Image 1 (cartoon, rainbow, N blue to C red):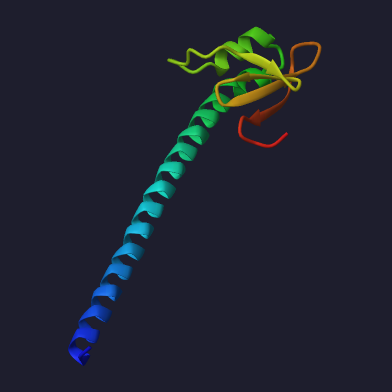
Image 2 (image 1 turned 90 degrees about the vertical axis):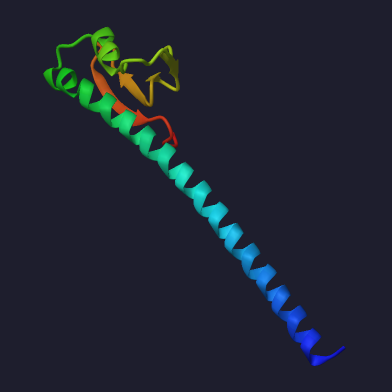
Length: 112
């Protein structure tokens, strides 16, 4: 094989390898941006819920039902459910005492 053919084959292989590397990184970057966007949306929703219930929790005289109603964002059609001592509504979980006061709030994706 002549030197010219070896050089052409080597450059073609290098071009294909570099294009594959760029394609992989572009795809990886796109997936990363998608996950980051979902994470930001989840944090935004949890923050909105927390800010909505904050005045009620600070007053210490709101009922459990009032706090849960305030935590429900407009357009959220999901039902609240209880698990591990928390009432989960939207992206947050709220733990209440026997009097209906909020003891703890947790994001839905935090480990227990």
